[in-house]
Image 1 (tube, helix red, strand yellow):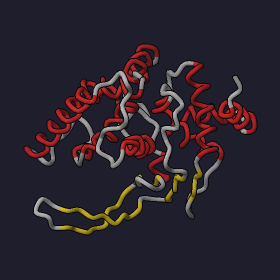
Image 2 (cartoon, helix red, strand yellow):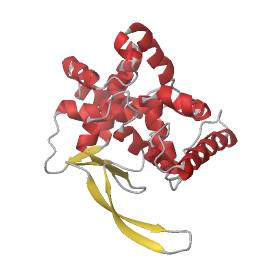
Image 3 (tube, one colour):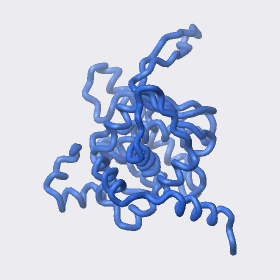
Image 4 (tube, one colour):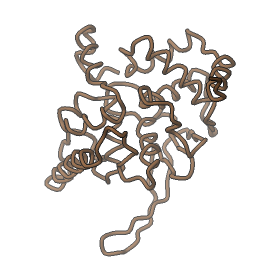
Length: 272
């Protein structure tokens, strides 16, 4: 049966071929893609092209984007969706704004006593519920290693979270997942992390302490770790790893372990 959506997809891919050498250069800059098989590599490349066709990248003064840079960003954006059905997961926004450096974001916070505080917060990324994704380009460039940091994945995890409404750490789960299992795993780990920081604000936490800010940030940070430091996340919060594995339909830990068996450099999971 003829499908307009499939026809349009083929048309976009045909009109925007990716130079193999350019894609290989992107792969070299993104170690977290190492170990993908041939079918996964092709799917990621195609979905990156479709992402760039669907989203507008606005580079502010001081940011120069090459074709390779655009693919670099798109590949990181599409990695979390690699094994999810093509259901327009990044709906509701069409623009990514790239700043030349970290930026100041006005914030409001109401404390427990009801007093509202206003302050400026320096950030490297921000996702608006009904607006664009904002990324500091240096943060995008420094993402892609097995080091627990990925600005693109972090901010787009917020967009997945927002599919269910205001960000609260609960994206729309698949039919074979139970919300009670998700809530138990996430809340238990979130509480454990906060308890550790309550005891010692300077504690060496197993994952970035920013995850303790609120449930939305916990989901975004653990999504970063799931794809870029899966061994650390699984060791710290194995139940969280299993829930993210069920949600993203991927197992980066197994992929990392295979790489560690084959390549001596990967015996240190923080290879850059």
